[in-house]
Length: 281
Image (cartoon, rainbow, N blue to C red; front, side, top):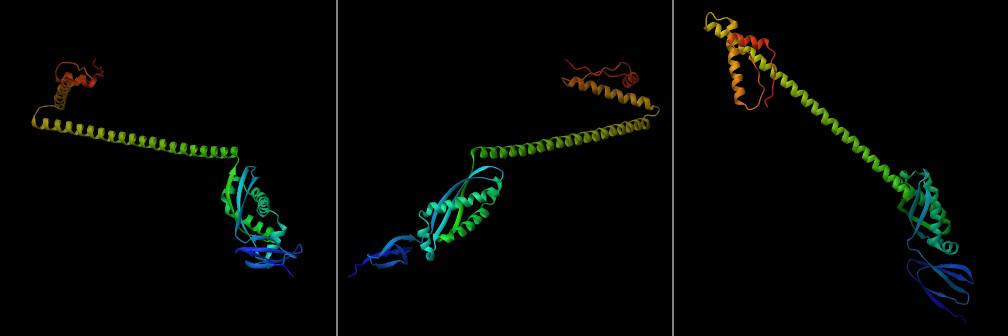
């Protein structure tokens, strides 16, 4: 008379059945009978997607030390569950070891700056190489995710200094450009002001000459017998008295000393003398 025992395999699992210590079959999910005299349920394997992490120290092509953390997502192939069960004793640890070996072969291909840029390419390369290696053991790699790239502290400090110096240099360039623009604009404004001042002064002198010419002509036409010299002396006298009036009106100013006498003396002295300027105390 045979004695029977029963076992149950859950969904997303596969059972490993042995007979007299030798693999006999894979048990699908459900209720099963087992002859305890010859058979045994050696174990169960999950067919769910599993994950393990690998943290690897490596060097880049420019000799920068980095710690790369990779999350490997894998699952057992249902038709190769026998290999996964018998060839691996600690699945998570051994898959992580395979991943670490592949990562150490990928990281030295790139410089430190390139690693942050080619993350996707590295993930695909690691996945392809791992999938090829682990398929013979009954595993399929679904994804490899690089979750962290951590350079050594001295490398991070050097990178920070490089970035800081680059920003400071850029700021100095911009500041120099601003100062240059200010100086150029100031010079242009000064040049334009001097040009306009010169134009104004020329127009003023031109108007003054035209006024004097008109005044002399009118005097000679209206006052018969007067010479141009007499008219100029009269105009100079008027300007002389206007100057005295302005000096008396303003509290501060420059005083011009002119020789006394008649209108002719004033004109001659004004044209001949070299005026001296004195600031009132």
